[in-house]
Length: 607
Image (tube, rainbow, N blue to C red):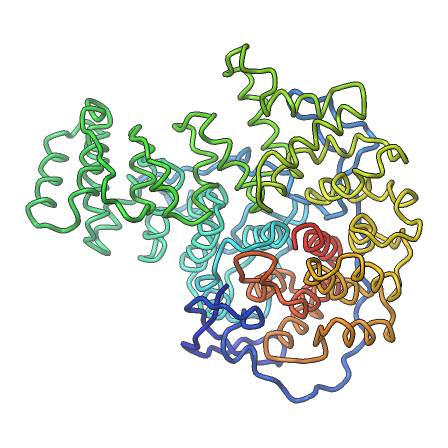
């Protein structure tokens, strides 16, 4: 859990409104204190707001593509209605723009920074108005201090779409610094390819000190040590840091200037500018074109894995021990999952974590397992996870496919392990025809489909689960379906809570909050649920007021960012129901009900 300390106040203008910026600092225990000090402050009752704008009608996305070692999805299969969802979009397939050296940039070749971002409304972006009206210093500070990655896969997906949207530079910040803040947040989320796209949009001679720093972090996270070479000269003019001096030496070594490279590394050692371990890694990189592997790396005593160590070690083939990986944040698992210098078998576990975070899609994860099949000893294939996954997708018998999926859902302990199994089997689950014979697997099958946004396939189970039982399958459809397809009432909610018992108390409260936020309970039922479950949804503070305002203005980028501020915890067990209510409601008011529903379904699945 996290708690916050006030550092500064910066005004944010949205229309005629003024917003306070409060900056996060520390971590905490109490689940109701996710917000910065000041965001929790109550506010005077506001006049009744105008009626919310009608929610945009969800539009099903294109049919799912086939996945390796699995049959193509039927043509009637459709993705969730996310207006260009990029959850199942492989961002790594987009083209990168190389940074040319400074002297190769004639005026007509300079890239405009008027609007930067690879995502437009046509391919999943939130549009150029996503952050409109907000002071750039406010947005930048929120991005910089946001604790990422967060506990929600679907919040991650929405925040990624916001940060990668093609938007203009807001007032109050320079364009390169605005790009740097976005890229830095993406790196902390584990989205290294997205960060690289933004950084490489800026010509080398337009970098600011902040962008130079983020550009180096990006090159290291992508294990592309030659990527910072065009920036070395300009970066060293701005800051003579040990990292950039060693980067200069590495680039000299890569360019065949071994004498200059050796001299620079010697000067770093003689000046005692940094620790010996990182210098030794630098020596290994300087010799990357020759005898780098002759320079051994001993990780004994290394207490923290940072970007320099991750990037240089993986670029030069120095194996990083699991104990050292364990010192890093979860986002490093996403970096690791896409690092080609690491053996594929060693990238599977990080890839599962990356899928849970929201970085990798179902298709990307299934493709990695499929590629692993070619590397397995034929004798080791039977009974392997890859073999079970193939059974889950292609076995003729639906009963045997479900049995295989059950194995994948339970093969790893812990909530994240189970959720990774659900993501892995999502499209296999979508191929199971609803039937009474399979009703005991309905909860997991629907959870799997909802984990990647296959809501239209999931609603086919509504007739099977809407028979008066108020179980998790009912709860998932109650919040996740595009339109109500099961009976939803306060009575059914009470029955669900009774069946869930004390162990499911938090999940029941989140469900009540989500149904209220989605407007799927009437006013009297919302009042009853508020009282019965202690939701406190009528309490207002600065955070909830800000979220309401940007939602009514349909500033979806701000909705995603401010929502993420309210969802900073280690897991779903730390998310207050009141926060979920405001987040779900905000997305709905902003015309993004699909995201609201998927966040709500994830809460029911993972709490």
